[in-house]
Length: 270
Length: 249
Image 1 (cartoon, rainbow over the protein chains, first blue to last red):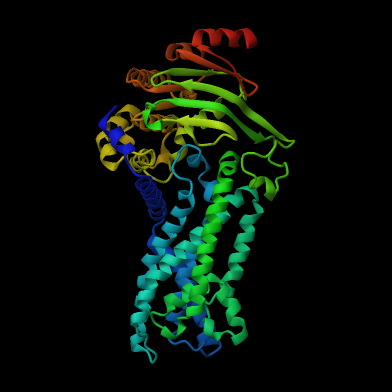
Image 2 (spheres, chains in turn cyan, purple):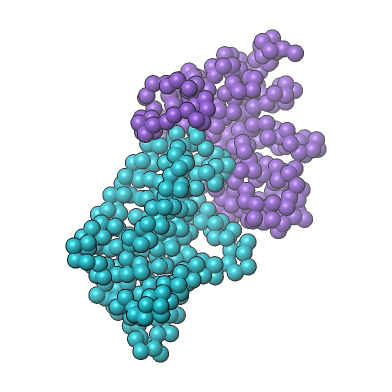
């Protein structure tokens, strides 16, 4: 036995997990960026076009903002993390089917097939944050300049919480889609509904008083309020954040339980 | 106890695995979460059942049986890419699976990236791959195509590079599932030489083949699977004779 083989066995499960996760994540990003000419720009072009449309509709067509100025910064602060969430969850519907051959030939911890999707979309999200900075700086020459507040530190817990939430949902969705293929389309539909049900084009405070507690059940509400606090401190909603923490961790626990119970059948099925 | 078991040991006790007969058969949420103990439903069959055997390090085992008698399923259980529904499969030490070997390769990435990815997923560090990279490419005889996207390789080259990577993993157990049917004669001979080298290095070999000559060449012991059961566990010559007697030509 060579010393190389011996050293490999000494790796802790955590090291092995981290290494495999990183290999697959960089593979995803490499494939995405080596096969298209515009590479990185595609990942920010999509939210930019959407932000452009909503900005045009609300501030130009209707002639008034939603009351959050500058609206384009307000919009992007919700849209970019939304792109991460929706991208990762819809990728998770194909987590097992797309990589079936690879899954059938390696023994790496199976949750990696979900977490790598969340991680690679998360890296794209972090890489798109400069876009907000560019727009925020651009507004300095407008009548309603954006100001960065100390509440920007909430971006860190927001990213962590969104990771917990997205992994949790991914662990629920990924194995179930293998058995119920219809779920793939159902998830797409729910995501489209969630886009309007989450405070992205509006803020939690814009909702009628009696709707707010219901809207706060949506764990994205609390998370987006933390992102937005960087430029709009009044958006920070403690109740929504606490709800979000509770629901995100609950979903993660449910996800781990479902994943554990179903993985042996999933492996037979794919 | 576990720490005393030497690497390369495989212990299969009372193992069984069942599959659905067709995709369309109804499945309920209850089945999904029922775990291992639920009873067999109509429309399911046992691909393997009550399989018991133990393999010592360095043994070379040939698995014999007609198509659909559970040979590949047994290999997958040993590779731990699927889990048994009853019994247990214990594998000590890492496995280098020559099953679906091209599965991990990505069409859009270059051969170089693919080598680092696949070897990395099987547990090699970057440094180890650096050391072995030239050897791997040399073995596959595709030095001119190192930076070519994988999809542009011929199907023979694809199998060659995949074999080269997996057979360089320093794992105590090797599984071979008729992958070598592809590739030209010269390369096949090279693969066989490589397998013999690995065997000489004390590796445990699990070999599935329909080729009697190959079986007799590599293996000392044979497992004969028929209708999902382990019918005979004996020296390879005896197993091949029995197989020929049952389904002989």
